[in-house]
Length: 372
Ligand SMILES: Cc1cc2nc3c(=O)[nH]c(=O)nc-3n(C[C@H](O)[C@H](O)[C@H](O)COP(=O)(O)O)c2cc1C
Image (cartoon, rainbow, N blue to C red):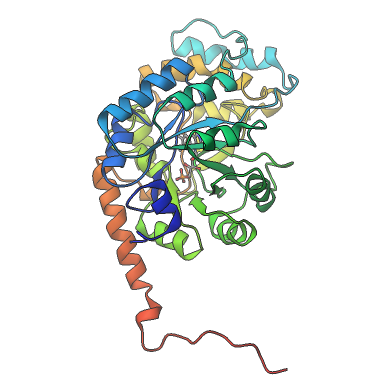
């Protein structure tokens, strides 16, 4: 299946399937190693990891598999002047902290993670792919990554963003449709205007750029992968589909919430992190969104809500977690990751076969230009 696609060949994998990087603990070493073993590309989302943790986790993956794997970071963010109302936000979280029996909320210090240090750690690892989201990389970074032999992938939510990434010299582009789980990768002027579905976004990006495109957003099974390939993508990147795998490092209550969710139960919110992201609606999201003007910019809001989310994970309380998930939730299945990849590969082949017009005697001839 698509073994001869340029992208699949250059990534050194067997199938056009990528397990999305998912910062925050979902992509464990076990998950990444299992996905790689199955012939797909496993990814570690390292945006919230210190340089030491990035080096250690990548080494742990390498100890488990000889196969290619990827690392992912958030492009450096312009720290926005504090908008929102810190006092009101802290106040809004008081009752939640009390319910979780943790110390009252307080305004956190800015994160100590420095992108340049994280990138240096990435360069020290044996990963063969690097992807990023939320923008463009600082000047020189793409060249440095490529010089070290890494295949570099950027993330776009509009055609303009894809063109900017292409001009910046990336090797491939993830087209992130509005169905996608978790943070929007948008770095253009408007998040609202960049809510474009995968079906519309992929072919428009394919037509506009010179590098391979990876479809992402709402793809949960082989029908989705086959559709992505038909739209001109050379691979599909799936996040939510891997969250309910046995090896995914999220709380049991989060996995159950995904299994139980319907396609109309997610929404894009700034409640948890300050940046628009798609998740299953729950009590904490609804409470914070009720006073949306008080929400702080990313990453301050993320740091402020983290103690509650961490405690909720320990206590397995879905109502206070950020339940990131895409609109394909109803198609989730609980499986070991290797089995999931195998099923998706089989489904993709079946879907492509079923759609195989080229084999039918009644296949239409290519259109010719009308007589003038
Ligand atoms: C829990 C979760 C965390 C994510 N974290 C990252 C991340 O750290 N970096 C990134 O580039 N994309 C991240 N994404 C977005 C994925 O790369 C991808 O665009 C998305 O999962 C595709 O939509 P789907 O969830 O419907 O498959 C995350 C997605 C999820 C569900």
